[in-house]
Amino acid sequence: MFTPVRRRVRTAALALSAAAALVLGSTAASGASATPSPAPAPAPAPVKQGPTSVAYVEVNNNSMLNVGKYTLADGGGNAFDVAVIFAANINYDTGTKTAYLHFNENVQRVLDNAVTQIRPLQQQGIKVLLSVLGNHQGAGFANFPSQQAASAFAKQLSDAVAKYGLDGVDFDDEYAEYGNNGTAQPNDSSFVHLVTALRANMPDKIISLYNIGPSASRLSYGGVDVSDKFDYAWNPYYGTWQVPGIALPKAQLSPAAVEIGRTSRSTVADLARRTVDEGYGVYLTYNLDGGDRTADVSAFTRELYGSEAVRTP
Image (tube, rainbow, N blue to C red; front, side):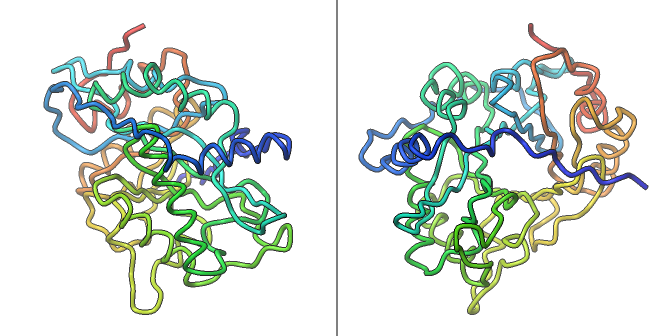
C-alpha cells in the first residue's frame, strides 16, 4: 500500500497584512467593471491520445510557464493539458462579515501579467485554472449563511475568470478553519448554492474539485445535486490511489495523485499504468517546479501516452 501524503501547508495560503488583503480582495471583486480579457484561441496542437494530465504550480515559488516546457517526444503534444494557479484564497472581512476573493502578491503578479504568464500556455492548448483555498480565517465554501452570500462569492469568481481570461476555477476546501472569527460551521446548502451559481455564471468554463474538506461531502441539498456541474474531480492524497466520491464518469476523475519530485518514479509510473488499465481519464500532479523534471514527467507520460517527455529549457 502507498502511504498517503497530505499536501504541506502552503505559503500561498498565508495572508498579507489586513490592509493589503482588503485592497486585493476589492481588486478581485471588481472584475465585473473591468474589460474582460478572453483567452485567445489556442494554436492547433498535436493530437494526443490518453488521459488529461493536470499540473498544480505553487506560484509563490515557481513560474506557470514551466508547465508548457514539457512535450511528448513521440508527436510533440503537451505533456500537461491543464495548469492550475495555486492559489487564490477565500478570506473573511470581519467588518462586513462576508467572504471575499483574495490574491496574495504572487498570485496577483501572475494574473496582472497574464499576457506573458498565462496566454503562452493557452496558445499551446493548455487550460489555465485558478485554484481557490481557505486561509485560516473561518471563511470557506461550506459555510455561506445564505444563497445570496454564496451567489455573491460565485460572482467574484466568475468576474476574475472573465477579467484575467482564465479557463475556470478549482475548489480546494482546506485551511478554512471554520469557526474562526465567529464564522459558522459547515452547512449542507452552502456549496450547492455556490457551485450552482458559478456554473450559471460560466456555463462553458471548467469547474474542478480537489476532493477534500466539508464541501466535498456536501454536494446535494434540497433535491439539487451539483456533481454533474463539475468537469473534473481528483484525489487529494499524493502517492496514493483513491477514487473521488463524486458521481462523475471515469473520464472526469483522477484516482491517482502524485507530487513531482517527492512521489517515487516507480509509484508515479504504477499509478499512471493503473489509470489507463482501469479506464480513468485524468492524472493529477502537484508542485511542478523550475528544475529539470524530465525523468519525473516521463515516468507517467510513458504509461499514459506511450512516449518519453522532453523539456524545452
